[in-house]
Image 1 (cartoon, rainbow, N blue to C red):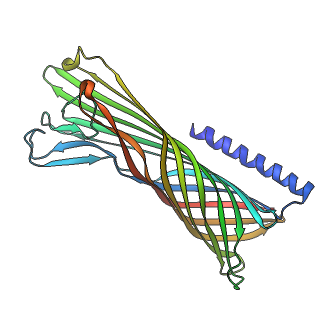
Image 2 (image 1 turned 120 degrees about the horizontal axis):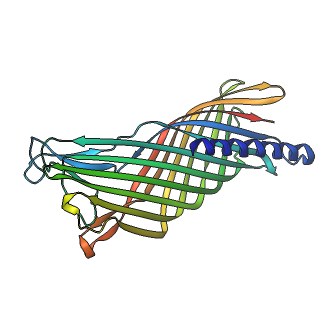
Image 3 (image 1 turned 135 degrees about the horizontal axis):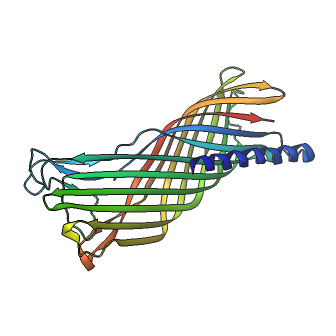
Amino acid sequence: MKSLKAKIFAAVLFCTAGVLGEAKANMFCFDNVKIGADYLYWDTCCSGLDYAVEAEDDESIDTATKLKTKHISTDYHSGIRGYVCVDKLWCDFNAGLAYTYYSNHHKNSVSNDVADSVILSTGTPNYDMSGNTASGKWKIEYEALDLLISYPLNISCNSCFEMEAFSGLKFINIKQKRHDRLVDNFDEGTDTLNFKRCLSVSGVGPMLGINSTYTFFDCIKMFGMVGGSVIIADNKSHDKVSVSGPEFSEDPSPRTFKSHDDCACFPGLHLMSGITYETCFCNMEIGLRLGWEYVQWINAPDFPSYEGVGRGTRAAVNEKNLTMQGLFAGINVAF
């Protein structure tokens, strides 16, 4: 799936470059077109990635006085971004389009020799079970599409410093998956509880911000960007819990819990800073850039939590801060 997305991404990028290049040659409506691609190396930081609680000091979960929460740790993973910029598309207004794709996944597990020393911390609906082994898996896929219009701000007499304001629309699509598993091994057999969860958040909203560059030498520039947005999103969750083993031989399994909120609103913050090196090759301007990036969605929808058992089970809305940050490196061509 990831290789297919990369092929589609490359095809769209080259087709866009060809169309805009032909339009410029035939119509002469704008100054130049810049086509670029970035490699992203981000880490994800978000709350709510705990999956189990373990009793310490060789005791069961009911009698232990010391408990430890286990979390799914995250690490750096790769992503891609492609963008197209058109200078002076109309008067002094510039236009831009950018697409970002990023994914991250990780898993952790805990095992204890003491019976009934581990429970799931995710609040599994309908079942109150303890065991001695637990595991948690988590995956996120993040997509963003930015459609922007910018305008230069002539606020400095220093020709080395440039600034422009931008505004437009941001589309996002965030998919998360969780799989928490609890195993109880005892003399009569093994009981297993699986809790699989899917969360999809997609929406659109306005965004605005400021870009700035400062030229140190003819070929080297420092750049920065500060942007903010507000997303009106559609939020869907689909959770399924299933059990197996001697203790649950007569239980109706699996059970599915769904929820849908078509009006989730939350703000976002986007920061970038880095250095660009520009040169010329075959009558084209080529730029290489390296920098750091920070993306945060504040109070974004999260997996629901469950309260009660049996027919009294209900889902409660959850929110969390979702942050992605790390390095990016890329190349762009202007013609």
